[in-house]
Length: 258
Ligand code: URA
Image (cartoon, rainbow, N blue to C red; front, side, top):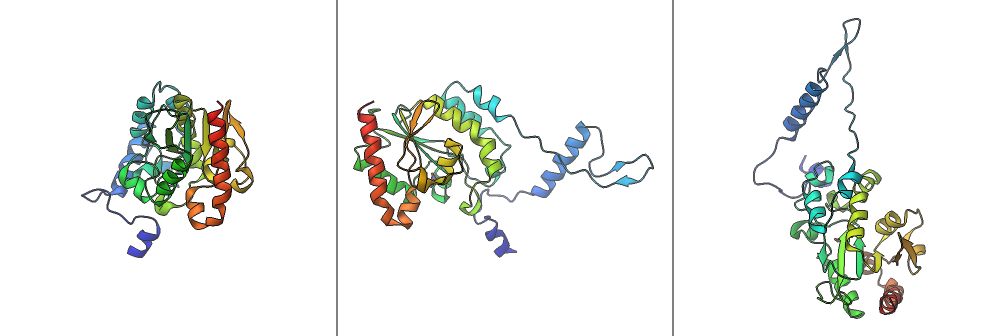
């Protein structure tokens, strides 16, 4: 059982006391049934026999309306912190919203928090984040620089860590996408840099992989976009560092001339 739990990603104690999720689930089912005025687990047919329970029909929450009503980054952060409809949040310690200078002209979008980010509540603070800091420094940028011209603002497609750092599902991404879109609108960067497959494909709404996307400018709602390899990919394959350097130089050039 323990091995199975670890495999499912339940490898950390989140709360001090255990929570009986089964009891919570049954209570939620009963409440939903009471609201729709039908029994939770069985429904009488015309013949009087009990029909098999109907599968719960989760309606996708309207995250577009929720995100659109946020007028500031602080409002967006609070809205995410009180949003409970994404299952990833239940397994996460923290909502990882953003780090860096929100006035920055450079905005970086990663995939999702890993273990270190989940613990600290900040994006890119683990090994990938340390490499990202060095990459930024190499072109004269830093996430905490006061001057927007030298600063970076960093977020992720998803604000919660997927269990065991698995790839985010298409449903998770589409549920949370309006928040990312609103995040970019509110930060209004001059250049947007999605890092890795998930971020680049999500932002550019394409199935083309990062190997072909990187190094080429495109646009998201009028903002220039330069997709790059994810720092984790550079750690795994240092031979990719030379093209990442070329991409960084293009970003620097674009920002210098903007
Ligand atoms: N990888 C990401 O994509 N984002 C983080 O915040 C950390 C690692």
